[in-house]
Image 1 (cartoon, one colour):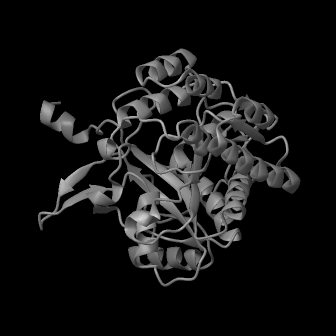
Image 2 (spheres, rainbow, N blue to C red; image 1 turned 180 degrees about the vertical axis):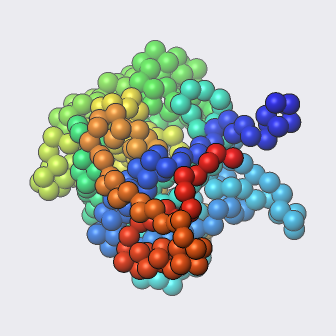
Length: 374
């Protein structure tokens, strides 16, 4: 095989292709998740595959966006994210719709990822956005929907790890930080790297009190009793304590709703995307080694598009869910019946018989005999 032919049939790095049983499992997972979204009265939205690149402009998304110049000279981008796109649509096409807006989606996003094991540029996400609702009630509703999705799929040992970016931001309130310094601190806290946090705090010339509080965030993780420890550790940081109080109210409501034992708290959870402003969470289950989904509150994002609204949402990664369910051995979609062979007579009568069987809902394999490889 020459080099040109090899390039033509080789898949580019980071993309995916699923056939037969792989595709059937993913479709079954998608149908289960979408049925939960519909059951909570969320409305499906199918947004465009690409939009103006400015829609996705942020410190986190821009470096990972596949952009291109349109025929009219405008800079466009393949969607690396659904949330930004839905925020724009909510502020534009849906500006006259009554609030709150409950929207769900299911589709692909494309993000550049440096080549490494397990990282893909083409991702299939299923998620929802709750826009314009009372914040605490919306937070609880979205978390309840995420919980039901995992329950419906039969995932074993799942847990929702809750955090609040207001804790991290509240500790740093008023600190004169450059963006690069803030990002370095956020990344080290997110990685639970105590020494890295301390080093980044020294580089930013933060006070010992602020530095100690940031280092302490890396260890404030566990069951909801962590919130008690957080209140003691964060005395003197009023904005951070307000965020802890918000999180406590959400945990209490979910606990009362029957999710006790499914909740964890991680105050070092500050998420990767920079538009989150409040509650954040990730969904974990044994057998994968990483989260299967997550989300959070992003109250400032819609203001970029001229319609300030409180907003919260989450997504589940279809491919990660399918892999997790395979490893746990807990989800097996119904196997379709074997097809009935139709062929061997005249083409017209064979086709008529096949159509008749299909009208009865039967599965057919049309042809004169066994298929041969080409």
